[in-house]
Amino acid sequence: MSTTRVLAVVNQKGGVGKTTTSVNLAAALAQASRRVLLIDLDPQGNATMGSGVDKRAAPRTVYQVLLGLCELTAARMRSEQGGYDLVPANRELAGAEVELVELPGRESRLKAALERVLGEYDFVLIDCPPSLSLLTVNALTTAQRVLIPMQCEYYALEGLSDLVATIKRVRAHLNPQLEIAGLLRTMYDPRNALSQQVSQQLEAHFGDKVYRTLVPRNVRLAEAPSYGVPAVLWDASSKGAQAYLALASEILGAAA
Image (cartoon, rainbow, N blue to C red):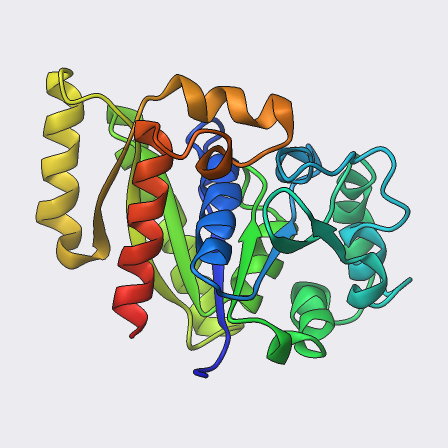
């Protein structure tokens, strides 16, 4: 089996489908018989809830892992719904930002914690918070590749240049192997002329770094988290679920 692939799902803009992408891609890869770990690195804990785990009841979370209070194996849980392992997060993690600043190796705490279990997985996905914070820097220091979900709208392109600049800085100082895996167009509406225009600009500028898969606006994707089940399992025939299954195939194809 090839080495573990570690993907950070990053965009400093909120509401672009990061968590939806993280949860559904994890479940789709698990369905393809891959061993998957999803790390929730967002204090909102939405990936935890979307995986069917109550964030308030989690005895240990990624917060304790980052602060060195427990091993990653002690915080890891099983998403029975999704068929993958999960390191949960909750509001406690918001405090980690401040506490990490004082700690040695603050940018690489997650990387160090993950190294001990890396061999157990084919894929590790990290769902990042909507900011270019120390938590996101930890994800970028840990990952080999960055998956960027983005809406095809005007402001998205502006935010993208900030993100690319951050990725370059992390590559220069902390993680020389970091690369962009791809840009994923989410909440795509083909009837919208601006969507098409931005989509074409992305393809012109980033070429084969833009995934062929387009994730449409889809009510089933929005509904699934309230049931704590990834949409690819909640309604596998929905357009949104089909898109994430196609994305998983695209990623597996690229890695083959």
